[in-house]
Length: 200
Image 1 (cartoon, rainbow, N blue to C red):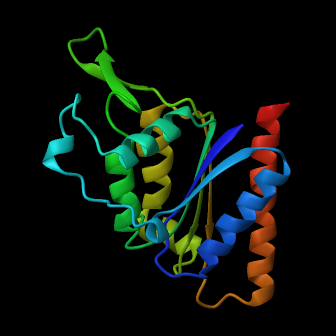
Image 2 (image 1 turned 90 degrees about the vertical axis):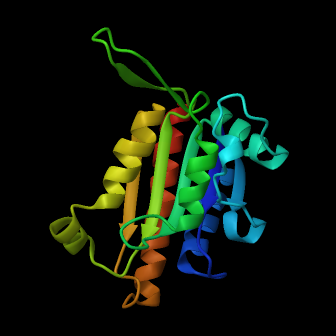
């Protein structure tokens, strides 16, 4: 399978980097082709410009390549920290620019005078690993877990990805080396489980 793995963490050597590298190694060991992108290291430009708004816009070659890769992927994996109950602006910009209408999704008539979304992505599995300092139970109780809604319903839901797995590792700030090692094993096991099932 062809899998796109997108890392969005500004701090080199962060636990997000450890997650991404662990997942990448796990998937490569299974025989998958993994296209890995560290958005900060690559200098991805997250600014969605007016020139890109038109459906038939001529896009910069690197952006067109990212869109083509994403649309052809059998699986999509995102790794990022929780910033204000949302992904970092870098990743938000990636979603804005890469998951374009007409390429990742479109709207079709619903037979009632309106329209409904139709997902166009090939990916059957979407995974998200994020880190936070707010414990998961507080994120859910206080805020309703916005990242869960964002990824499961808004992004993967709109783009037609049927299987979604998300894991929040928290609180990072007080975690021990032993806890982080256990979390990495969990991330590897989750990646192996979801993508092994797809190859059976």
